[in-house]
Length: 123
Image 1 (cartoon, rainbow, N blue to C red):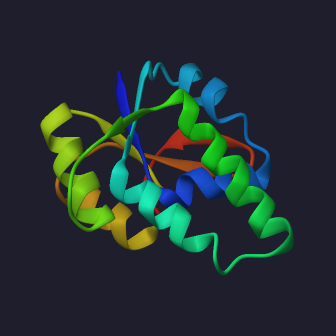
Image 2 (image 1 turned 90 degrees about the vertical axis):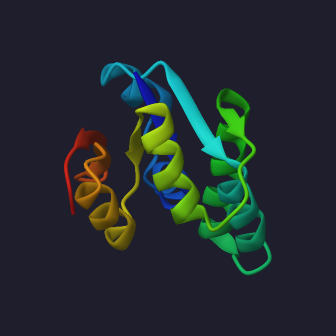
């Protein structure tokens, strides 16, 4: 199966120490996509974060080496929704607003549960 990662999902996975790729594999996700817009958001955040948040951001950026980067222009949330429909992919996000848009559009959503593991669901 395919999954698209959101900025917030990458950072929270790193912050909570979740083994992102093992968890995605446990849920049978084999193809992992990250839109270029998410990478732009991550790089934009690097200017403002310090301490543990900055460390989590650096770990999140290191996750990108194991993902397929997708070149699509636009706002990250819009791009994620568009790609999810095009690729028939789920989306991993804990962003409440994006989660609601995805659920409304019929896209499967992966969320963090109990700061330890990933699960299908909505916020």
